[in-house]
Amino acid sequence: MTKIDLDEDEYLAREAFAQYGLTMYLAQSLEKSVGIWITFGLTKDRKITQFQFDHELEETFKNTFGGLIKIIKDLEIQIEPNLLAKLEVALMERNRLAHHYWWEHSVSFTKREGKLYILNELKGIQILFTELDGAITSLTDKDAESKGVTSGIIQKFSEDLVEGPIILFEQGRILRKKEMLIEVGRLYTNTDRRQYAPIFTFEDGSRWTLGDKGFTYPSEINDTNYEIEKSIVPLLPTLIETRSKNSTPWEYDLNMDCGYVLSVKKTQGIPGILFSYSIKKK
Image (cartoon, rainbow, N blue to C red; front, top):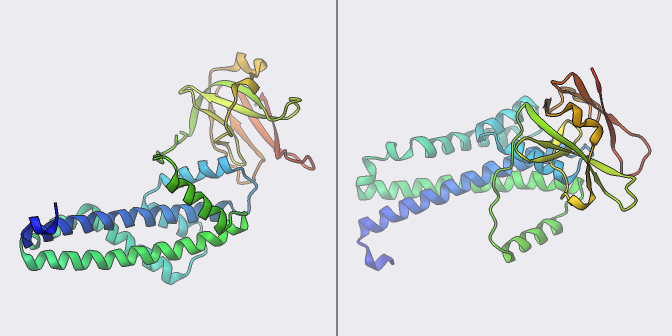
């Protein structure tokens, strides 16, 4: 269908709905950009894997736009006051669009002048969201550079996504405060089996490893290099804490309901190894 097939009123109505959809798309893009920037900022000075970054990004993404702004304030993340103020305006506009917009315009939408007003208003909001997205992305790029993620790497990744198959960025599994642990194993990372990553399986079949503050995503698991920790089998299944209350990276305990504790300690001077762990009585 083209504009020729519609009278003016029908065309303006279609354009209003289309521009509304575009505005909400830009709102969601801005929200995700803020989440990515926060995650880079909170991890840039820590030694973590790509998989732990992905996990923390998912944890950040579970917040609403308002929740993200609250994180910025509560953690006193450095940001220009003017930029923060604009983000708060964007939040109000996003919430208005999501919850009240068409009710506000339920009468004006019936009139030609009202539809023109809506189109003009939406385009103004689009400019606000787009400019803020650019400003936040610039901040993210600086933090990304500090972790070796250059603009060239980002560009190549973007090109690969465009040229590749259709994929969905579905929300990853979010851990509860406690999970039912049913298996502990070793994923060997070299052929001589001297180094391994601990793997923890929860009752839903999902597998996790240890990060600097608790459980996080593991690297790809190849079952040919995986074996069960048989000494721990008698303790299972049991509920276990998933996140440390201690703020010191790689130095924490996770309590298990069976009367034991998973203790993580930082290692020093061993290339490629950040921590050791043990399971012992409380």
